[in-house]
Image 1 (tube, one colour):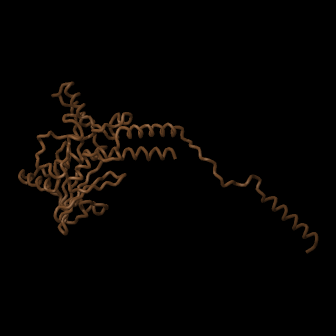
Image 2 (image 1 turned 90 degrees about the vertical axis):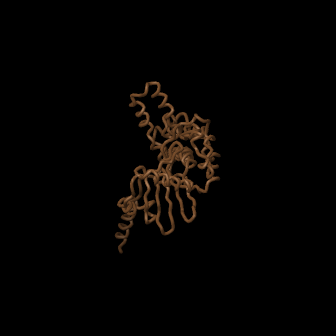
Image 3 (image 1 turned 135 degrees about the vertical axis):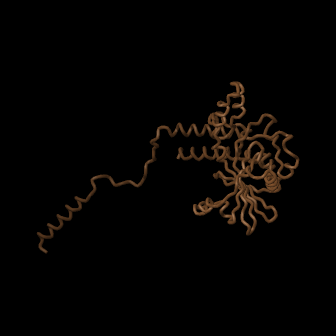
Length: 307
């Protein structure tokens, strides 16, 4: 290689290095603190914090009230309650039978008080004063869906109706006897919401009997009875099982059955602890759990907004 050629090659390399040299500062891997772009975040967080504080002051939702715990202690049922989930289950054994009672706090939030209010407004037999008084006594207390609950918190009694003392037979009280007077003075309670209750009675190798019931105001009303030869159909978890269940004959409404048969069915479930005490306990527990889940919801939303 000649001296002239070598010099040209050196000049080309220097020119190339200058061409690829960046004309800006090297990129820094350190990230500056992210600033929130939302203008309402701080105000929303403060409001959520205020609601959370009010709710905590109104009710101690971390501790199960004594009257609810007493029922569990005196009954044969075991409680299955997973935090963050709406469905609650009670389980027990009765001879060779496995009994599972399920209900959901969704019934409280789905309860439409306005429909009941409309009934009073549309009843021509009620005077204005009677309609107002009836509507007032039927106001739903407690629950995140209650009007005014957001600023005022929720009352400790909430959503629980006590049946009159003389309407509860002593035979209904021995197992899991529920002290309804613990929730408030007589006459100071409000009508409860209708809670849908599903009772599954399973026998080994014999299938499952499922009873659909409504618990309200201390009464358990039996609506339908279904028999499933395959127990998994009673609590269908997949679309395939649900489709198979829909094609099965589920029997007539209980109200269409012979009255003597209805009485025997009521005695059948009563022997298994599905009685007045349970009917009183379920709405009260739903109200308590909904309060607890509402507190967790407020806390989780606030934490997300603050993050």
